[in-house]
Length: 385
Image 1 (spheres, rainbow, N blue to C red):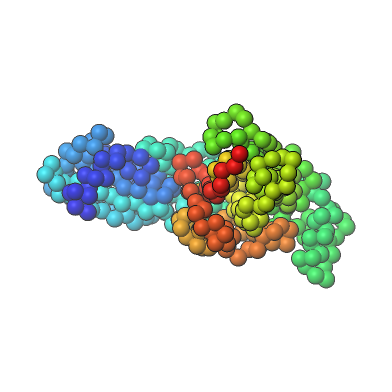
Image 2: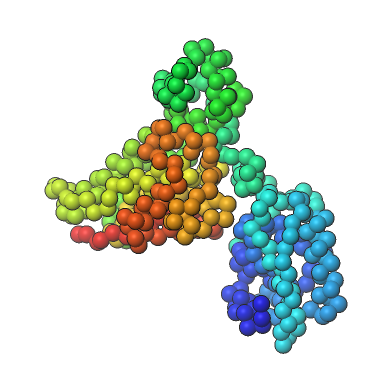
């Protein structure tokens, strides 16, 4: 990195990937800053720079001392230990040390005082809530939301006949037991129960009333009049609850209603489908099975005059990029749910859904919104009256 590139970066000011520090006061302070970047998606700490992006620089002695501080912080003050890159950039106003922190591969990281930190815009915040901590552990493949126990649930919350049909299809020659204790043992064996509690996958795939125990995990669908999400006029607005299969079926009906009317522009005439149904199938099932179930929020289906948006809680997992996702590269966030979904839903399980969508709609856009913790797939459509 040269001085010109450095100054260009500083002009962008502080955000969730850039932090300015006049100096580092202590190893504890530095370690907490590094931990926040490791637990987020990485970033850079610019030392020798004021909050307003003015370069004050470091003396040669300060640069040497900082090198030792960085080394000790990464090896002794952060658990698990980590590695960072450093760049000493000479400028006309003095030397700036740039600490490049990667997206941590062994999340979650904590400082010497056993605190977990995350970046939130230009600042950091300590993580104390169990849900957020579990999401950090998921990022390090220590735990998964889809296999976690749902408090207050039991076998009574399952549609046993639906479960029985699934079990006997998945395991030919085996039958689901009749006795509750034996059913529980069978479900524990395939990770659909954790002790005496149902796992999240069991509730969302086979629950009698999933919304009664997991009310946030539904679909909110709005067909707006116009192009603005802030608009108050709409053609239709729905909330879809139930099992994932039920939500999928309701969501597809919602899309089909739009697709059959959009060409004619009239609710009293039949129209010609504009978007291949495969596009809606892939986007909807991907949103349901790949969403982050550690985030208590709904999947959103928004239809506007010029576009369709499918919004799913959670960012792309494990450093997956937008382009990689559109090319069919995948990372499993909910491995248990995925292993079961292809037998219950229109899910092919080959990680090629977005690739097929792109083939059908070449100008489809995928946005990985890190700040909002949401993935949005946007399908442009022809405006209609």
